[in-house]
Structure formats: C-alpha cells, structure tokens
Image (cartoon, rainbow, N blue to C red):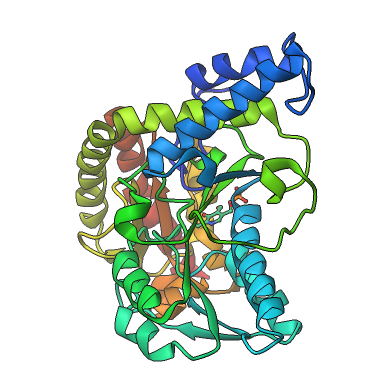
Length: 388
Ligand code: PLP
C-alpha cells in the first residue's frame, strides 16, 4: 500500500518500531556471526542473543535461562503443549494422557491438541461465559488423575477478554498438573509476572509487540522438562536450529520498550478505545462484545445488526482503514467464529462483528477517521442488504 492508511488491526500484527529495526540491522549486516561459533564474531552474536533473553525475561518477571526462543508464537504453543504431553506420556509409560483447554483458544493451541488427540491423547474443552471468560471451577472439575497439562490463553485475540489464569494455575499446582498460557496477545499490553501468575509455560510472539514476524519465545519454569519438537543442541537442548539473531535482538528490544512504556501506553489505549466504543455505540443496532472491564486495553470488538462484518472490512479498506472481521465470515458463507459461538453470541451478531485493535502509533485522529466513516458504511450495507 503506497497511500497513507489508518492501521487499526494490531491484534493481527504490529509495525516494527524504528528502535527495534535499528537494534536489528547490524545483525543482518556486518555482525553476521553464528552464536554457536567459538571466535569473536560468533561470541558477539551469542552475547546479543543472551542480552535479548534477559530483556524478554524482564518483561515477564522470569529468569533469562527460563526463556526459549522459537520461530513464532505458534511454535512456542506447540513446544509447550506437545513437549509437555509427550514427556509426561513417556515418563508415565502411557498412563498420563489427558489435557484441558478452553473453547476460545487460538488455532495454534487448538491444532496442537487436535494432533495429540489423533495420537491417542484425550482433551477436555471447558466453555466460557457470555463475556468470553473461563470459570476456574470448570477447570478444577475437569482435572483428572491422568491430566498432564492445562492450556488456557491469557487474553483472547478476538474479544480481548482476560482469563483468570492465576486461579487456574493455582488449581493445577494443587494437583501437580502443568499450566500453559498463550500470552501472545497480552504480552507487552498488560503486566505479566509469571511468578505471580503461577504458570509453568507461557508463549509470546514478536510480531504482536512491535518486533518482526517469525520470532517468538516460550517461558519454561525452571525444572519443567519438555520433549523438544525441533531436536538439536541449541537453546540448552530445548529447541534445535541456529538462532535467528537479528529477530531475537529485535524481540528483546521490543520487550524492553514495552516494559518501560506499558502503564502509560495501556492508559492511553484504553482512553482511545473508550472514545472508539462510545462512537460505535451511537450507531443504532450496535453492541460491544467481550468483558466490560477484564479486557485488553487495545481491543474493541463491536457488532452491527443486519450487516456482514466482512463487507464492512472491505468498505473501510476502500477508504484506507484496516480493521478485521475476525474469522466471523468467509466469502459469503456465514461461518461464526468459534470464540463468539462459545460465548453464546446470537448468529446475527456474530455475522456483523468487527474487531478494531489499537496499538503503538494509534492516534485520536485514527479513531476519529474510523468513526467518521462507520455510520455511513453501516447504513449503506444495511440498505443494500434490505434491497437484496
Ligand atoms: N496465539 C494467539 C492468541 C494469537 O493471536 C496468535 C496470532 O494471531 C498466535 C497464537 C500465533 O502467533 P504467531 O503468528 O507468532 O505464530
């Protein structure tokens, strides 16, 4: 896209911040050493990777040695889930084979569990309430003697609802069950302290917090052992493959910036979001989805009666505004998102859903531009819909 555009889809991906790019560039140029090489060119790359590990750890209140770099958030989720499942299954000689998850997880987690189920593992899926929140009692009730791991996301990517991960982790700990949380959407947006949360495993992704695509990290609490998904000796035998030095450096810098600015940024984004939601709700036949207070500060999920969210996305794109309908609609067919379906959302609201997600660089002017376009766009789609 060459024209200026308004980007309001930060839950899909985020722009790389200039400070992050600047930190990365030397590692894509003259400082190209392999961090596993003994000579100085390699050892300076090793130092850069270890510095980044400390930066990521600081964002999470973790120890640097508890951070494993991966190729993305999905890989971090898979390493946590499949790595824990296979390890426990092997150690228990097949006796342990049960996992628990929620109905609103990202496909990274859903698919990892689906693959395990095909291989003989069993999974229980707990539901959510109308705000998209898991009840920790449901997880408690689902725990079994043979449960290996519970995987419940920290915050949902569509509606932004924040889950009671601390309470769920406490229930897991009582039973000696591992707790993994997918924090891909929450890392850098809300404070995270892995010690206070009590989780054993936590996944994050670079491209959701202003680092590049193709890099992620998994927090692995000291003492937790996983069967690697990619075998090899890097990352202390936890993830093979020569480290992606430049992207890891970028992830570290992005985490450092996010940690320093988190409180101010969250306050600014929630003020902007309030302006956005107040404006959206002035449109007749509209509503906001997700938890009223326990929600990511950047995420606004609105629904408009009588239209298709996908068509609204197209109409706004023609005006240079990028937002998302989530997976609510696919070319003509009404295919409600599994998240909205789990929340018991009536199909007419599911179809007209729009996810607007703010982030670094979002301004009041961006919000006002969208608010100037929305009423007309919604009305036009309703008129066209009524005529057909
Ligand atoms: N988990 C959640 C909640 C996400 O929103 C995403 C990406 O949208 C992922 C995992 C996957 O992250 P990545 O794109 O880095 O693989």
